[in-house]
Image (cartoon, rainbow, N blue to C red):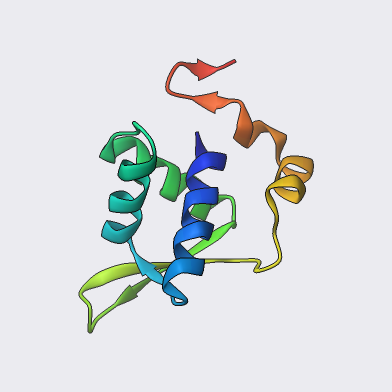
Length: 94
């Protein structure tokens, strides 16, 4: 579910206090949920397409780094603006 992945990214950014790599997001989300790597990557791409996160290639790290596009976005505000993010799951749009 993209909303859950978004929340885990926000949580990780607060812990690290810097943009994080895709691998750090995958590791963090995998510890907190049963989502597989392909689902997490799919959610990251979906969130980027929606403009909720920014992914930038870091030549020094040789990896994409991820940051929140709008810093003040709460889960409540996200639900208000994009409620469909909360209904998308592995089992289709319910």
